[in-house]
Amino acid sequence: MRLLAISFVVLLAAGSAHAQAPALVWTSDLTAALAQAKASQQPVLAVFSGSDWCKPCMLLKQEVFDQPEFAQYAQGKFVLARFDFPRNKKNRLDPAQTKRNEEAAARLNKEGAFPAVVLLSPEGKVLARTGYRPGGATAFDTYLNQLLAKN
Image 1 (cartoon, rainbow, N blue to C red):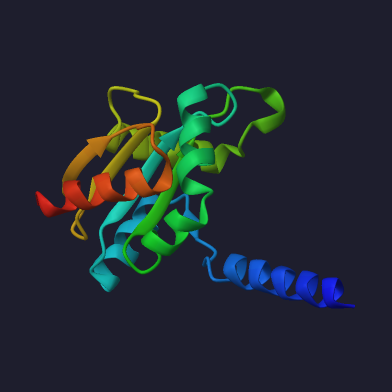
Image 2: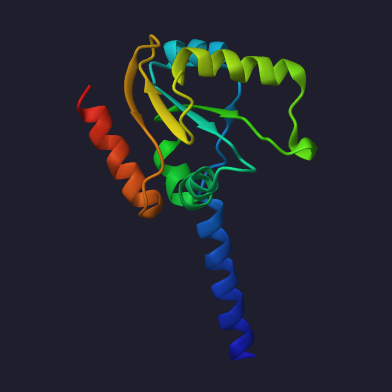
């Protein structure tokens, strides 16, 4: 009985810790992201990735963007935008989304870097560019703070 009670408390604590990480909302429309940024006076964090072919893109998503630490850090701090360029036929995006992604890349990722993380002011000015950095969510969050502090 005591073991059952301890197990219940541990499960309850684990569930509540997981529930504290907010679900992030990523847009895939640069115009909408910039409008939201201007209205909220928050910078845009725009990510360009190749989700099914670019290993550093996959690592950035797995080690940083999918982590609860990043969700807690980014919530209320950024307008999040993701522009994916998959190559596998099964992951192909609809033509309208492909066009929006290409337009965003033409504006913010002309060099075609993958992954590319671009920080924009609420007015749309490029503040900084970066990519995958090892170290996980906490290290990436710290690095983003340093980039924002420079601007």
